[in-house]
Image (cartoon, rainbow, N blue to C red; front, side, top):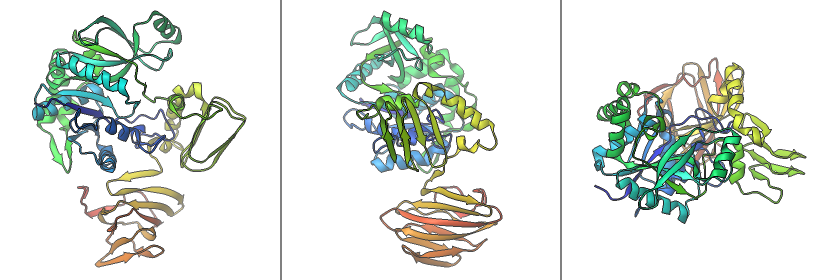
Length: 475
């Protein structure tokens, strides 16, 4: 049995509340908003102290498995396991599967810290003091959650009402409160004893499984079986789909936390946000003298208390106040900060229209296990992309039935296979791939390889790929 904490990072969400940067295929946990790390990488960093933590377990969607692996690799973080959910079944099933996985390998006494991959947290002394209190309380048999001292009467968070004090600094949970209207939130803050529900948990693997079996037996059975029948795939662990599918779609709060008599809460004053809206991003950002937070290419004049972020074009904003202006490669969002909690409604409207539905699903930049590509220009019978290949990585040996390709090397050195010939393509050199010809692109160097790809043909869809050999198991 390990005496250290085993982090369990939940990284499978597909939320679009931070559209247009966050989309179903590129959710916010894997996006770099401010600073030089993504939210997922910041989460990995918070659990990197080897004196306190074991290597983390990540639970994610199959579509994100290579994003998880690559972003962990960039930090030099070794993962204890990456569990792949075959379908979404909410947090109860994900946590139960992680607990069963850890219990099998480290024993039921192992202490788990379950945390979201897309929260912004300042990991200061207050944070780690709360972690120590929660660990001691979890070892005493409690299911611990973290209550955040509310900075304002927020209506976007659930609340926890604390009960009697427990030994060591935690409290019993008196009640969980759903997201309130403003008047109710103001009443709770005035009364005191209410904290934001952070969605961070601490408990032993055996204790949470025991509570699942008592209050959510179908979840527990499905999770245990999905782990027992799981199969390894490269560095990933695929949970059994038929078993996992039998779990009810329910959150851990509804499944056990609101029912158990063993729930405890650690009142905490560290800085925390679930970054559920552009307003939340603005509140946590570094503001200038006019209260503005900017990122990327932006010029502001007579503008106050606003959030302006660009991933592409230069944004010039004049004479506005309390607005969010967010530009991705293919879409721009403009709205008042106080209304940004409702971006989801706008995204649903976009998703319902055939002409705009793709803007909510996929991002111009797509990531693959070998690197990725950005769509630059689309036209009738042609398409232009920027390919980026990581050092030492290679694409699959493949061919296309309906298109030919031209590759131009703009950075690094490429090793290109065309038919039976293997050639080296250096910067400012190009190579032609005829329609139907076997080909492969590899980066034998030590720096990122960048290529411009021009596709021409009658059909340019991503499904026109016949993989012959693939080191990532996709052929």
